[in-house]
Length: 160
Image 1 (spheres, rainbow, N blue to C red):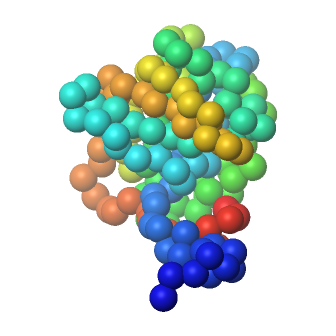
Image 2: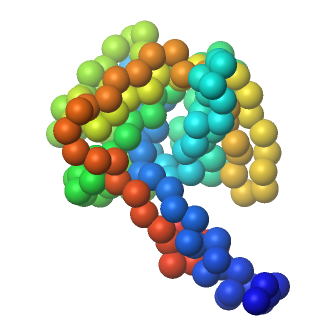
């Protein structure tokens, strides 16, 4: 039976499955990364993704129209990536140490051990309450053949 009770609604929201991703943006001393679970393909032509970002995250300010960001698909069992990026990172190279990462002045950081990579350009941004929905066109990608992406469900749809 449908219910408007917050506890029941939270349990139902929590059943929505999602993947686990690391989003990186910025270059040089501004480069940052964070754990994200609200990432979804939202278009075929052009290929597009949506990423929900809490505006309080430092990385949020880097995601302006025309900027580039990288979505890294986390492989099932890559707990070290979850631990490292769970609270976000400090800006610059030290925020990515000791991970295998490619840093450049042209692209967001690329985590070499990720299960997949998608380079995107921000084409839109929308306020959706306590998060912003960032829309990006996928420009390039790479996927590892082995393993499976990490998916999860939450116990309560009102908390990470």
